[in-house]
Amino acid sequence: MTIKQLFSLSLISLLTVACNPNASEDAKEHIITEEVQNIDKEKTLSSEQKEKVQHKTAVAKDVILSLYVGVFRSKKMNNKKNPMLENKISISLDSISHDVLFGHSVVAGNNRPFAGKFIKKDGLYIAECKEPGDDKYDGVFTFTLNPQDESIKGAWTSNDKKLAVTERSYDLKKVEFKYNPHQELGDISAEVYQSSNTNSNEFERITSDAGKFNASTSLLKKEDVENMYKRDLEVMRNAIYARHGYSFKNRQMRNFFDTYVDWYIPVSTDISKDLTDIEKKNIDLIKRYEKHAETYYDEYGR
Amino acid sequence: MKNISTSIIKNKLPRYALILLMLVYSYFLWLMIKITLQYWPIQTDVAFLSIKQDYIHLLHYRIAFFVHVFSAIFVLLAGYTQFSNSIRTKYPQWHRHLGWLYVVVTLLFAGPSGFIIAIYANGGSSSQIAFCLLAFLWMLFTAIALLKIIKKQVPSHKAWMIRSFALALSAITLRAWKYILVAVFHPKPMDVYQIVAWLGWTLNLVIAEIIILNKIK
Image (cartoon, rainbow over all chains, first blue to last red; front, side, top):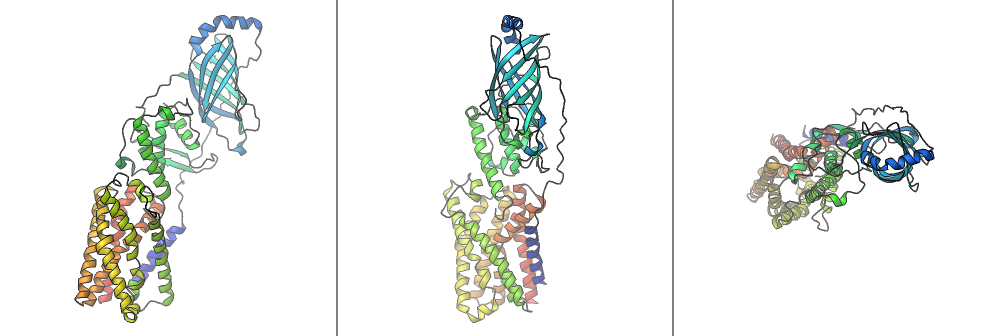
């Protein structure tokens, strides 16, 4: 009797070692709807128009120099190269000198300046701005700015036609960015890509625990974080960076904050100097538990 | 646990089964040695200790932790020798020497240190009570078993040693349950910890009582 019990016990444990249940049964397809937009392209500027532009530069500054945010959608892509279909992008129009517009875009952990000429036509500003061209992902922005509804609509084409995505469109709204430590994730329950391969159907669940604490305002204790899944800890920590407007290089985190966190605006690729003392302490604590969970959660041990 | 059965069951185990059981036991002992060696040379921010940073500054916690880790591994050696009838009859000296090693390590080192770290166990009062009780009962059963053999009460000594060793084996079974529960149910880390803090040794005691009952019959 006893021997049989012992046998079956060890058999059970051996069997469980052999099977590795995958928790991604309810993984769902990520459906992207493509929007085709009409983009006005005005490439040539006549000298007459140039003069007009100069007169109106002062006015234009007040109207258009601002921050705009929205979705950067892929329109032409190579699916074999694992393209990121949608990213949140912010475009900042920084200054105007004569008829040249200077600005920069922040998207997918990439902060790039651009400059180009613009004209005013029928109350709309039409611009064609180039990125410097010394980065693999540089290209050309062409857009129409509508001061009435404070929006920017346009397209971007890459210089390098071998990239995963060579053309994107965007429809951005004017926003103001200000660090606000009280921004909450709220009761979020979502799924993120499990691997960096966004074509795979592997998803990982983020539970509402991720938004249980605000790691920017309250100093966390070990009791707060010790019973959380690794993925929730990661989101809670990255919410700190998101409040500072960090543009995520990490695809999973980018996908999560882009999709589920409406206050999130990517404006910077380096926020390390902006972190408060509470945030730094919480980051250390959360990271320790993330690391422990990653190494030991499903291991034989504690 | 495997050797317990060999000595207890009246119908002897087939040889292949004994070998298989010893292999399984050796495998888990090997895992325990690897877990122990994570802390050598002595480090205070690795593995389990990385989530004990609130207590690691306490000198008595540090001492208790390392005493426990580096002493407790030796009690598992008893699994190879102490429950074998043939070893006990052919080499009684070995049985006595390893028996003393087991008792001394348990009562003076692994047991008391286990009790101290149990006070600071993760998972709140539930798992703290579970681990304190485990340490207390382990020492109690071991002490009773020692007294019984001093009084030459062999059957009683056997029964209490089976109980004592069942609790010593919780080091292995607790981690096995954790592994199984995580693989099957994917629970939150402290939820599973609170469960195995109890499941890891109470079930062993139940099995021990079944073994003792069968033996006495």
